[in-house]
Length: 299
Image (cartoon, helix red, strand yellow):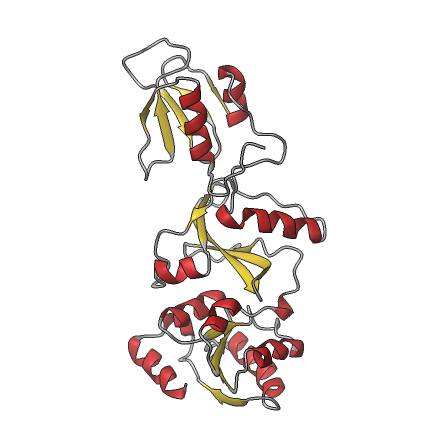
């Protein structure tokens, strides 16, 4: 495989291959989805007419009309290195090797991973890039859903347990995906980040964004990843963290109430438990500074 460097993206690989073949790159802007070059057929040496997708390798020349759906087709035409079956330039950045190994150990699943998933650089709904880098979040553009998505790896005890991806727009359908072959009843997120905070108190919330928003504000928070997903066996993870007190702060809706009722009784035997009630139809991910301060008072 030509992808020994886990930081490779499809864009990096294409640029290297074009340079090897002496194909002149005229334009490759960071915010552009395409690389523009002079056509390899040599019909116009003054105008860069060939456009190549950084995400798929799809190409088209606006001069002579030649084109194709993938990098492998273009590689065949210019004598460059093709992608082997199942190969890709490390779609999950530095996590790729661990995820591939995780898939091998999991039940067989029908999974298609994007090639253009890059290390996190932007901001996500008031969660800083600093926090997103701590949890090794990455982002990519999903051509099928036509929106940007964020991938959140689930680590516990420095071991990759799985991952969840979420849309970055406001549409409700297909909100989460990629949580394959995993039993979410045993997850806490972001467990390893909170473990490094060496806290005696944690806040339990429902979703990963809620937890990240609180962590970003210095509040140790763990997500049970949705109502109906908590298991009493998860308590051992809180015990391992040497937690003495748990604050339950679920969403202010019916699902949040259900999650609160599931979680609270199983915790009271082992920890001091307090409740933090959100406003109707609100959640910890939407807390204003005043509410964040009120929650910190409980800690």
